[in-house]
Length: 102
Image 1 (spheres, one colour):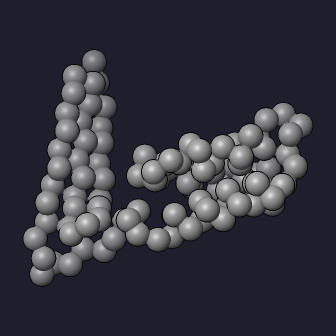
Image 2 (image 1 turned 90 degrees about the horizontal axis):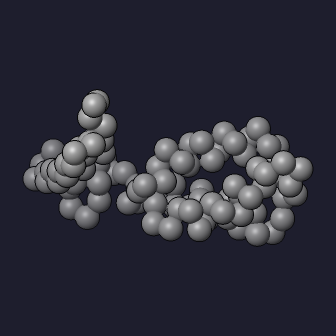
């Protein structure tokens, strides 16, 4: 893997980081490789990469909706933004968040 490929992978994984428990701890060995003159693919980096691939490709990251079952929408808001999660059963189907412009 090259630095460019690693940045691309971490960019994709970072999009889902708020939905992955302990994302920072899992990705730490990979983000460490991005420091200047520090790119050395190690066993720890490989383990981190494989672990991130696993959590990104298995539920509960997102699931497909079943229109025969009820949906649940959870909402949250503050003075700086709001968000919502569309659930069905045990897992999320879609996420939405937006900052409120001052």
